[in-house]
Amino acid sequence: MLCSAGALEATSLPIRANCTNLLRTDQRLNEAAQAGNVDALYELIWEDAYLLDQIDQVPFVDTPLHIAASMGHVNFALEIMRLKPSFSRKQNQYGFCPLHLALQKTHTQMVLRLIDFDRNLVRVQGREGVTPLHYVAEKGNVDLLCKFLAACPESILQVTIRKETALHVAAKYDRLEVLETMLGWLRYVNMDDILNWKNDEGNTLLHISISRSHIQIVRLIVKRVRDQINARNSKDNTAMDMVKFHLQTKPEFEELKSMVRKAGGRERSSLATMEIADYLKRGLTWRRKVLLFFYRSSLCITDENRNALLVVAVLIATATFQAALTPPQDLWGNRSSDIDSAANVTATSINKNRTVIQEIQLSPLFSLGDYYDQFISGISLFFSLSNILSFSTAMKVISHHLPYGFAVTLVYPLAFCFSLLVAGRSLEMLLCSCLLLFAFQRLLYMQLDFSKIRFRRSIWIAEVLSPVLQHYRSFRNEIKAADP
Image (cartoon, rainbow, N blue to C red; front, side, top):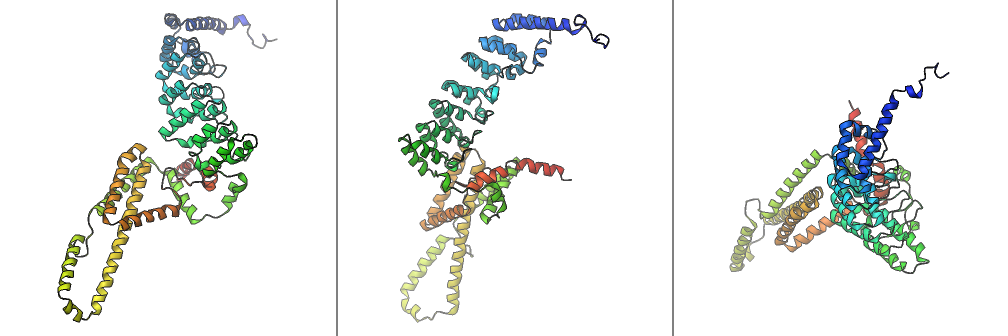
């Protein structure tokens, strides 16, 4: 019945012979990979030039590179990578790439040579989204961890399907030395924000460290997560709640309680419990309107606009610094030193002719001149304060849009010189300018940073503004593309 329907017998299928030959070739290739025989590899390629391409078409397969990585044949593995670089990222049927297999077999030389060939292999995700960095963090291999971070710093951003970073994995498996190493590395690269990332259960690194009783790690990170010290997990517990829970059976947590309390930690019962919908229903205060404006601007700013902003900020800083460097002049072009000399001469003349001055009646015009001088002095003071505020704002914009090293070497020395110039005028002017800047920053209650606005210990920023505007950039791009 099948033959009448047009079905062919197995012996008459034209692909049968090709499949048999391919299986035999694959077996010979696997044997060459297990032995690390490069000459045998090229003999097979001479017989079938598309041999590696045929293997590459299979989605999940043990490639010759997988076998060589497992066996530790470095030269054979590098030759395969040179011929077929895509094999280095391909997963086998168990979800492992060649670098994962080399790590599992503890072939350190193979691992180092593979990442020398392609450093981005450190961030290749395998089974359950685990990267090689996650694996070494789990096993506690500090030496390879340092080499991985040096080769591919971006790998620290990769998370598993459980939203776990390498920090979460190290804390989960009690790898304290690995945690200390990564915490030190994060300080060097200025990426402490990763400490606040949550896994699928809503736990930050602080939550996991407290639950695992890692008192030493809590000491290291509690001061570095002040912005999110009151973050809640999926069970609605804050760090302070977890500390109090463990305090019932572990007296040593009394020290942690005081540290978390000093860092601003609170129980969930003392925190506001408003949802995003509740915030959206309410109106915006003027302070939140200002924050929202800067936040949207930071999401939409392009590299061209950022460069233009830096140019304008540099021009403002140059003009205001020159104004502070040049002594002030009055309306007639006399410098302050000339005015002081003239005042001394006049005072001497007045003392010599005191009897004459006493007989002269003060005219209304002379009183009007005094008011005019006071008015000019007030204008000069207002100009000086405005100049200080403009310079400080411009330097803040420059420092936040430049890399940290440039800010230290360029911005801070210039700001110090400007402070010396202001202090040279008068100590009162310096004190008044500092008070003005402090009031300006506290009035907005934020740091002027167009790339990342921080609103310390603010539930509105962490739980409302960030989630609502998470994809604001792509939203604006689609609106512009749809706009005729």
